Image (cartoon, rainbow, N blue to C red):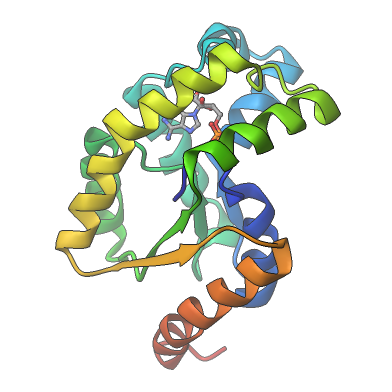
Length: 193
Ligand code: ADP
């Protein structure tokens, strides 16, 4: 987890490779749907462009079907989900059905001014339609109002690890590895990999 611009997508690539789990990004799945012009894409395009969240029922459905795919049986990294308390409840039931659990909720922390700077820069470089000043402000508000309570909820379960997301990509990756290696060690004892 992390605010827009915290580096979730960037770090997800490293985490996915190191622990050999698929990185499942709701934002990427929604952007792919928009790009393909699928019915889901048509439904969510305006929401993404405005910085609002996609409704929980749609998002929960997308994630629960993705978690059923064969590459997700031995574990996964969720990037950008859950982002509301209702999504936490939906994920809880989805995991209970399969007798699976979250091992760790990793939170990448970056000061707000740095987030805005990074997102504006990405908007200039990559042209992502939601990386403009107005939409960035909305996404940060949504994060504070809807997603920070999610972190508090997981913190009360004792599974949150917070890492400093400032500095270089490699520095953050090293902090993440230090936080996740012990957790992954616990996981691997339970399987024959
Ligand atoms: P960022 O974290 O920079 O906002 P993401 O790629 O994670 O980027 O998300 C982009 C957009 O996709 C969000 O602003 C929202 O519209 C939608 N989205 C992604 N994840 C969720 C989610 N879990 N619930 C609802 N909407 C989501």
